[in-house]
Amino acid sequence: MKISVIIPVYNAEKFITQAVESALQFQEVSEVVLVEDNSPDNALEVCKKLAENNPRVKLYQHPDKKNHGAGASRNLGIEKSSGDFVAFLDADDFYLPNRFDAEKELFKNTEVEGVYGAIGVKYYSEKAREQYFHIYQEKLDTVYKKAKPEDVCPGQMNLRGSFGLIHLDTLTIRKSALYKMPNLFNASLRLHQDTEFTIRLSYYLKLFTGINDEAIAIRGVHENNRITKIETKEVKPASTKILMWNQLKNWAENEPNFPEEYKKHIERTQRSFEIANAGFVKKWAMIVKYFFLDFQSIRSGLYNINFRKDLF
Image 1 (spheres, helix red, strand yellow):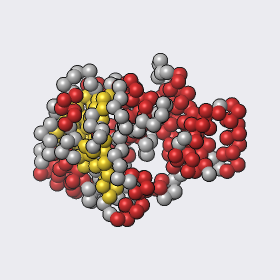
Image 2: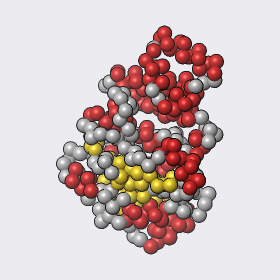
Image 3: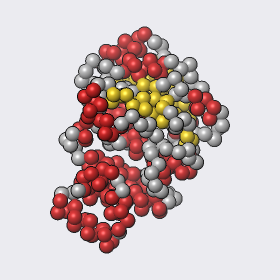
Image 4: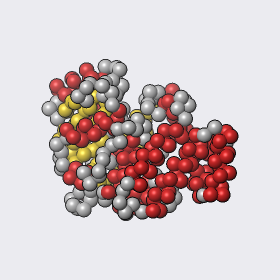
């Protein structure tokens, strides 16, 4: 196996060395592709030293040297990658020694186009623990059960009950299969572009469960995580999810032969977040309206934790 590990780098000077070293521990990793995204800190200089000291580390920036977001940075990393397989890693996260154990076996089957596993959590400070423990706790974040490839897409959309989401740090893709997707990461989304990507990916590719009963990577949680603005209410959680589900809705509507059941579910999920994001009067007006027109929209919203949190 020749694996290209793609790491978008933004404001991560304290963590990027650990991330890179965790990827370089594997002989199967032929290169670590860093895409530095105009960081306000000293991350670019740290990346330059990493690239100078190890020929397997490749450093790129966007042509205009400006900030384009994680989605666009991952797209550039994929474009520059030369491996037969592509894996991803956030700059403040790191791999564990068992990261590619399942992949080495599963990818012997040429029908396997992608493999995903479980991610754990590490709090880099007590402040981060206090701020985010209610979200991540100490639990594994993963698809909760081994699933057939055809069940992964509806499972991630929570179409038939709780299923979990694929975290990019645990995802490895056969690069030749990746281009079955008409588009890669949605660069217009600054948040949730990873979830939007994995949902679409699981529609086109055969993705298999790897190790999901123990962590194969660690999510590093600190005070400056991108989710901070959401959790501190600088941005309403529902508003960012509306954008994501709207993009999925547009994709589904233009995808030939996309199941009507899936389309309806995406529309209802988007609607539930629109209700959650509305002002008090409009919120309840929408609830009354859809109680009669499409009660399932209200029901699906009530089962969404973020929706419930903002509704009452």
